[in-house]
Image (cartoon, rainbow, N blue to C red; front, top):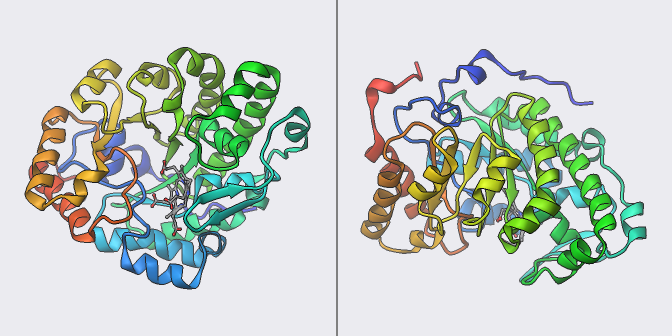
Length: 363
Ligand code: CP3
């Protein structure tokens, strides 16, 4: 059992940090910035650690996971840290075999295909099964100041299910959709087990000290709105509601979601994460200004010269129109060949372009 060393403090409710203030829709002295995949292979300091340890080894050693989590905070000056972990960590305690194979990405050698596979799955107990991840959260919290909150995360039920069924990344989601359409009872039983595991894991992250949660539904754009509504929304909703009930802000993110935004809002989330395909002003208007927005520069823009990046940042910020409740991010994770100086410049440019010192609450 992990003891909560850093319980929710008053500033988590009336926060002074830019990131948490924006999550609550409060005015900020500059738009907060962080990046999905801000720790990773584009960064030489990360590659040095990866020469010695595999991804799964880093995650299983809380001190190293904490060190990697802190790298982008120290190097880039971002306004939030995201725990170094992976959305697929939950599959091992549920009973599947996970490997990250060079050049292929994640491989699950015993994927879920039939009822007996679902019946065999365990609902995990995060505190005993993923105690090392919770320990990393405590270490990171101890290293961070109150101005840089820690984001915990998990994959959303659909995205995690798709890996567990396909056995790895997929283009057409043939096995996943076939289970959904042709074996709906098995799909339901499976999604129940995944969503219960995710609720347990995310609440344990909050109890260990995560100050916000992001739910990654990275591949949900493969679904039509009607399929999302019928086969996915109830399970995402169960997870999002349970986490929101703890009081921490929840970012609900997906890609290819232009047609799914209202359904994603119905499923839940304090903040909705947009990918770059949705013009931010259009997405925000559609969702309503009571919703907070995260996004949405194209990650590929960061491979261009800085004047080009500046223009694209300006475009995103103009669409956000200075409304409180915008968190700047990319529309998806940083890609491998991105120059670190460009990522750093994004943080500086966003802060400089949105600077309003009269709203500095940081004391
Ligand atoms: O900095 C951060 O954002 C925190 C760490 C983080 C990782 N994975 C570490 C990682 C986060 C938030 C994730 C989430 C994740 N993992 C997602 C959702 C986000 C997204 O990209 O849509 C998904 C789909 C995964 C599954 C996954 N993990 C894949 C498909 C791969 C292989 C592809 C790749 O990018 O190499 C991974 C491996 C992985 N997870 C890496 C990192 C830094 C690459 C690491 C390496 O080999 O050193």
